[in-house]
Length: 522
Image 1 (cartoon, rainbow, N blue to C red):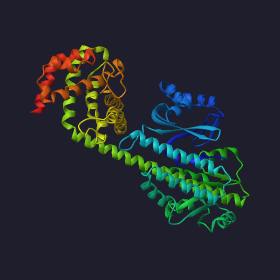
Image 2: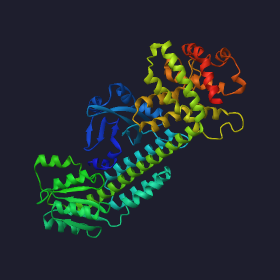
Image 3: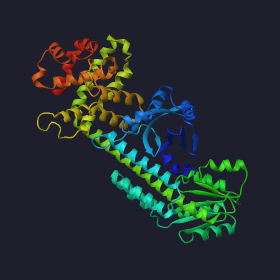
Image 4: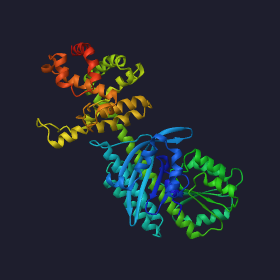
């Protein structure tokens, strides 16, 4: 069975879906046309499309053992070739087991779409991706079986109900989209054919279940679609050879109107020309039936396709609705954070600018220039945003439990996800890089005793090292009991875990930074 029509609607969201059957050395690629190949051939197929710097990471993650160690789910960013340019993609890998089969579901979404729930952004993404992947795979298996159509419909409905129970955030999207996609006001099939006998035959098959619209040529069909609207049309039967406007002209109209991905278009034609048939499949039609028709096959396959398009469209709309809701949440988090931390952010930004203007002269090997310095200073805006979504009960009793300490030390990971999601839409990749690095690494230190990962030395980006020191200075200079300490006392007592080069420059600018702080305080 050709499953490619299952992906018609999902290709608006996913670049692709790969099903990698490790056990039987088979990879099935769902794009506009379904492809099947060995894993070796898949490597040859994918290699020229992935950025060389990301290639090893891509295939290292496509590994059953690694997935099993990560609870069956891995997400990572990579660059994918689109024409002559590379575009940023996020890849989701999910390991599933069916009998003797171990399958890896690999789906890619354009851009970096890391999302999350209130306390763990990555957790939300994992849940959504896992559950939607399961639903898609179960639909594949169901439609490839000989289960009677009524049972199939009921089963798919149950899948959607279970999806909502597991991911309650889908409930709003399900209600809205199922009303528009499933419970349409009038379930209609449009038959476009200049042969009245064919129209009569198809009408007889579906008249008990659908309202029937007929058109004897492509122009009449397009006028009907414009008049009636596409919302209530469940499926279209289309002949290719017609007067006035032929079937290809109708396909061009449906493609330009983004209709082909929303409802199944079934070609009905006796055409045998190979070039014409190839041209038809390039439109990503749902099916192609040859005359004379087998009436039972037409009825079964058509209802199957209609149900399938409803389901995939609803799921796709729910995912988009959920993504929009999450983007809105992230925007609000950033807005509130910047408001609440405005004074602190301003102090750290000013001290960072003073420091870097001098540091670039002392240590030219870091390649800092005015452009980079300005971007780094701008990136300070979101340095501690991960802390903003931590539970407000942490430390409420005056001291931290071990569990609370663990949560607190993980906040840079949450912050990095928020920063990347928030800034990705701006298209400023330099700002995105500096902001992401600063948010993730500013609490690390040179000797490796920081958090969240305990990395050390030059493994920490220099801009994150600098901002980390400025954050500590902010804590010190904002406390009355410490502000009176001499510069060298502060350095020896609180900054001895940081890069000696940074400390050398700090000694030169410490008084200037203290002066700026005093001005801001007053």
